[in-house]
Amino acid sequence: MSTALPKGLFISFEGIDGAGKSSHIEALAQAFRDQGRVVTLTREPGGTSLAEKLRALMLHDAMDPLTEALIAFAARRDHLVQVIEPALARGEVVISDRFTDATFAYQGAGRGFSWEQLSALERMAQTGTALHAGPDSDFMREPDMTLWFDLPAEVAAERLATARVPDRFEAQPGEFFARVAQGYAERARTAPGRFVRIDAHASRHAVWQQITQAVVRKGWLAIMVGSKP
Image 1 (tube, one colour):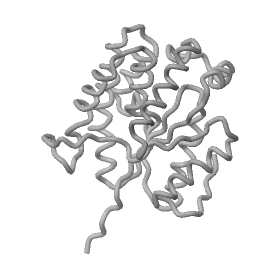
Image 2 (spheres, rainbow, N blue to C red):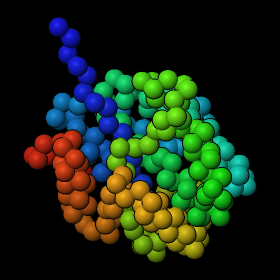
Image 3 (tube, rainbow, N blue to C red):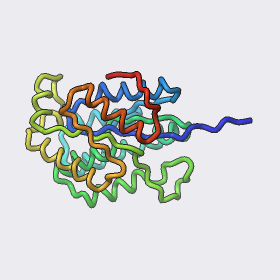
Image 4 (cartoon, helix red, strand yellow):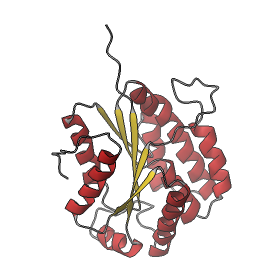
């Protein structure tokens, strides 16, 4: 008698640089593990050998907005095919530090690249990757939930000022991050069923409570969650 695999879950964390996602990503992964789920932790751009090389180019080499967008979606396609879809097919919980919303926020709102063209690239890169659907399916992969760490750009800038040596994006001026924050808000407005706004200006404990409450409401975790960031 075979045992059915649990349903795979895909959760993305989004927010501007300095929003404080990292410690909560690991904590949520551990909360799922504590309740018996297998978790794949990954990130964008990155997650595969090819995508990590493309990530290094994006973070450190100068390029125009179209080049950035094309690299982001090329990395994403490989990430989906090589990591995300196989993990979901195995019934795992996939938690990604950023996904497509970041491209709309950074390259779209931040760089001023056409959202219409980004939408076309999104559909091209994220369609036909699901293993259960087949390469000719019109199913487009998106996260089941996006935890959006909403933080004022000026607060994020203060946090980044004391962080590591900044990459090409982290070194952008405050006006850039203000546009990125607006881009995230616009994406959240267009997908209210997927986005959960996290008040990232709150205390670490309060942020963690917001995250766990969102996941518990979906029935993906039991009420008792022992992991803490």
